[in-house]
Length: 328
Image (cartoon, rainbow, N blue to C red; front, side, top):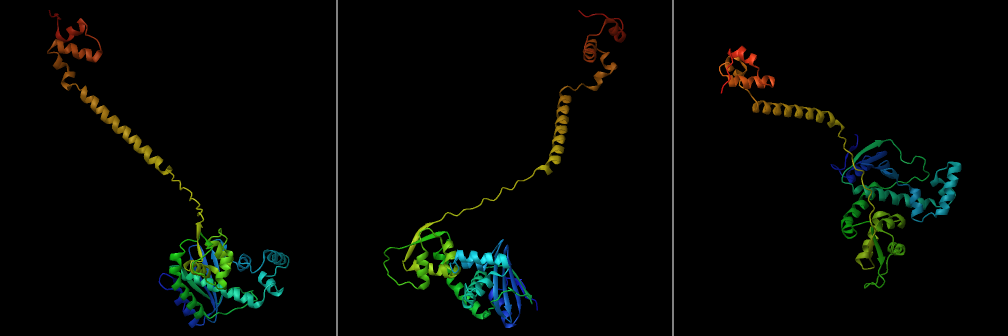
């Protein structure tokens, strides 16, 4: 039976539990716009997870350096070895004893939980299960996590998430330690690390990146410290927004219709103007016939002047009226 659909109609926990119950092996692929998540399974148990945010992939190696688990200098040496030998970086870290197998397994389990937590927040996203596919086939570290346990932990965190987000509303907020808190508490191990990283300049987003706790745990620690009065808001970093390029609208397609309309308007105006002039200077048709103006010399003279732009000669008058006798 193919497993595919959209998270709008079926939630992630149901999909994961279905894969676990059927003991399926393969990769569950979930996509929301440019974000892509792959979750690997073997006999219904989770073996790995991969998050690609647009063009930026969430690589485990980068997490190790940013969180301080592996020093920058050590990582540079490992990367040089990788470039020379083409050995996978995680294999070098393990085989050359920069990290133990247990440490790497713990990190992988942590990152899997973090990826699943993130997808739990998605309200929509197309998914399909590629049966038989394998995630990280060359990895030396093989982990298998109980799918139901991952689902239950993500569900618990999602129950707590709304109150945390209502308090910490923006990832650009910068917190600072309260010098003399009213309530003196002994912070736990995670809270102590968060306090040690607060320098009055690091934002919430910065803390998530360098704490090594991931998004939920970092927010959760900040929430507990904030609600117990151990930290307070220092300021909020300005958010840099990249203006969208203005979309230019081409009017080339209007050139021909506008030209035609312009010509039509000119023709209509010429017609109306000509009609108006004709009405102002209209001459009854009967005045143009000789039978009419032979009855009256004065009328004949006016019509003649209109036709020839001069007065008629005596000979021309006599041709019409006979012998010309001027009036007194």
